Length: 107
Length: 119
Image (cartoon, rainbow over all chains, first blue to last red; front, side):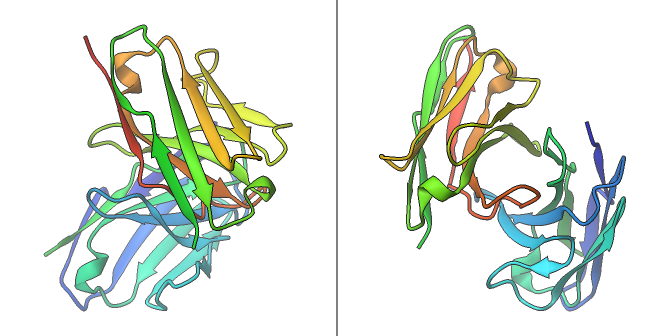
């Protein structure tokens, strides 16, 4: 099983600032990496797939990078609606696995 | 517009059974792999099961293998999860989600249905 590790667990950021979230895979997943955003009481929403491709309707302030085992989600200028929990997921191997999540909170 | 609507959740005693359903609309259901993902209260996401478009390929997480059975009815645009021998640790919100193909993410999600296993 591929273990996905996200850091930090919690990130405190002021509105308008940049946020950088990390995700590490225990073995290579090539570029088969997705990022999701989840707000309280809501289902997850796909943000990024293929490590760096924004899903339909996702603002350009969200960007993904990386390949192999190291990945990054960057939110260039945090808006109020961006405070949420973010999960990475490897789409390459069974069982499909998620990271533990990073909570982005208001500083 | 893609819509996924889960139903069938509720309170069940340990050792009991429950059948979840997911009604799909707004896309060609028979062309998509369908999946169940769960989230225990206050916890992260856990993939549970996947079924290919034609039901030929089925996968389960080790935590549910032998107890849960996924199925689909393409004529009814519906996905199912039969859950037997339920345990307290199966308590979670269960989401159905679409997956366009191998190496693809879960691109659309339902709102989830809560399953509570408690005596």
